[in-house]
Image (cartoon, rainbow, N blue to C red; front, side, top):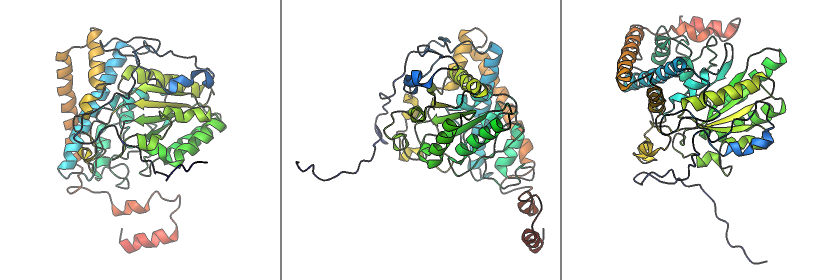
Length: 410
């Protein structure tokens, strides 16, 4: 046998680096309305191709077309538009607050607003999300008070988590928002376990797991798929593919699977890809997957194809690893602009009303910010009591914590 030569170590390379010309030619975008909508009880083996396509509803003219369209009324779409606009305005104010030193850390959702805002409207009361740090739209779309969110970001005296969580790591059982973990991918197995417990107890509530493209390389992601598929857990397994982890492109985590949705095929899980910048498509797919879970048909894996326009966080500089103009070249556009254009096309919205709504929303966000800052910010005003760090850890405080609290004088 001939000598094959020396082995070579392979490291995936992004299509373009800083200073280059953005290139999304590898992103195949099917025509809006062209991907079929299968029956809820479809055999996953018959829809394997859906893990490699992209479900779209809104076409370039702003029209809703195809079998996934028609699930939302004009009023529901107008509400969804306001939710996304509110999240974007909220983001801008909190990013500015971080730069002003009022909080230590912040993470924006710029360009990804449709994913969480639309998904939340597909769930029912009591369903539980196990989110990452970029799904605040789940709270915004469920009416969670912005003031409370800001109090948590500022870690002030009114922070519902008493300063014990990193800013933006919210928690609200009432709103179906499980405490965010800074250890990425842990929420995936937690969501599957919660869903299994719901089924064991003969409840009617389902779970939704959330993860970013980079974190799918974690072992927890694969463990969750094993348990979800084996026990047919009533869970929606969401993968938000925004093209970039904190500093690495999606190819590092994706490996040779082609798409992140394709990861579910080996587990027998029905797997779909959806245009994450299309509010109508996101809602329709979320509704389909949630109904499958609720009818004891097991898990669904959904990959949202979107783009992180901003930095990974307030601690990140994306110009170090991607072209500055790349977001402008993203072929799936801006989710807010696309829904706005659709509503204008339907005759229920206009550029003038949109401008007015932007001003009204900004005024509401600023008013909430002023109220939150009356309770304090990172370096000024009221703070949670040091006593709080000893509370809520055990049902009954053990002697060693009681002694530590006494030694701290709180």
